[in-house]
Image 1 (cartoon, rainbow, N blue to C red):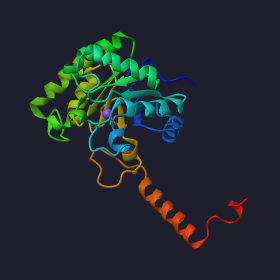
Image 2 (spheres, rainbow, N blue to C red; image 1 turned 90 degrees about the horizontal axis):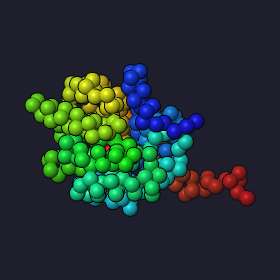
Image 3 (tube, rainbow, N blue to C red; image 1 turned 60 degrees about the vertical axis):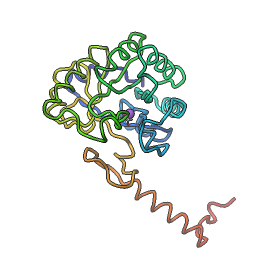
Length: 264
Ligand code: KIV
Ligand code: NA
């Protein structure tokens, strides 16, 4: 087995083959998803919410994200591992963005980086790809800007579709190897997907993108509470784990665990 490369993803688009991407932040899930054939894993800055318990992705730092990137890279054989650049680590301009991307490649060992924004970060994308580092772009709803956007809102409705399209063209032109479309109308995602030669990866963007991505805890039902509309739960890990935890505690209390076979 060899690592998936960006050229494999471009070939998949030409063949009309769809693929699934997941987030991962640790050894066990990385190994399981890699073994299950997920070709691209994202160490998302959503680790802010899903690992560190922050309210938004804005506060997570490179120091918090990098150890998770290393864990996922070490625990996979085949997946192309993409790392998110945290908020504040690329907005100042191309030089800062390139410095951060190089840091993630060297200290994280990832195979590509992702950053948020369209036209406004085209220079950053060009600088990073110009140094030989693949960049995944991320447009539509961009969580790092949620305070400016005014919450989790669908982007590109009505006349705003032209903005999403302009952003998509700008990131492709700047050299991005793929682009995440988050929370945009299905029709807009379809249009962008047909227009671009690079793969589009949808989350809340309908069925017509070249690939899909979900946060793994959402996909597997580990996160308790109401999930966004675009999430589908393929398991109920929160229930499974709650049940296991209660039975373990109960068996310790009543003396059923440990039994003779667990004892030296
Ligand atoms: O950080 C993240 O999880 C993401 C994906 C959902 C695209 O950026
Ligand atoms: Na992210």
